[in-house]
Length: 220
Image (cartoon, rainbow, N blue to C red; front, side):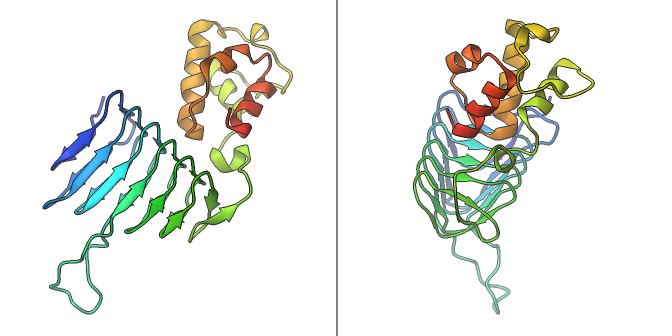
């Protein structure tokens, strides 16, 4: 198991989770930089956070695989010897950053916002907005393909070793290994892929693969 590389001064809240692989996460703070992660933040593998000023991430936010957050571009145009001034980055509570997102200096992401995979964010993202693109702009509510690269049915096939993805109407009792432990494995895989924490009671109550997909799509 690989642990995240942590340098400098970092404040980490209770119940923060770092994925243990397959690619190491790096947190680097230089000079007087202040990096803070709130309670119950989930950081996936391969994340890189560089902080020379202030970077804050609010409670219950989820940072997807290979996200890059940097508050400085490490140079000043036309002045190779000058030290760049960092731009404060604020990521609110219950924010979802999809895989491959880049957060640039000065970005502010409001509470409950969702950033689609591979998007580049600078400036202000309003609270509860869904944004995507380079640069990221506001879109309609995201569908499952925006929040993760694979459907819930595909994840079910992976977790339980099925040859094909099950139909939307497939119930857990028809899939070998979908017991309480199997359900937990599937829940963790969904949360990792989609960057979204599901309510466990709603997840357990879902009667079919399609109903679980609906939970993901609606953000329940």
